[in-house]
Length: 63
Image (cartoon, rainbow, N blue to C red; front, top):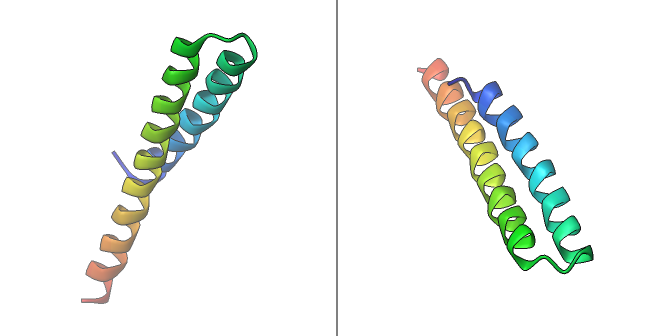
């Protein structure tokens, strides 16, 4: 998977996670809120993975 794909999937998961988190909070659905938190964290990790891939590629390109 490319760094761009990782970043897109990460951004998507962050947005969907935030939506689930807010809907869960508003409806007092702790399970949905928890799912949102986990999905948001997954998205953050995917975005970071894409950033790391970019950094590694830039480092390799300099060699």
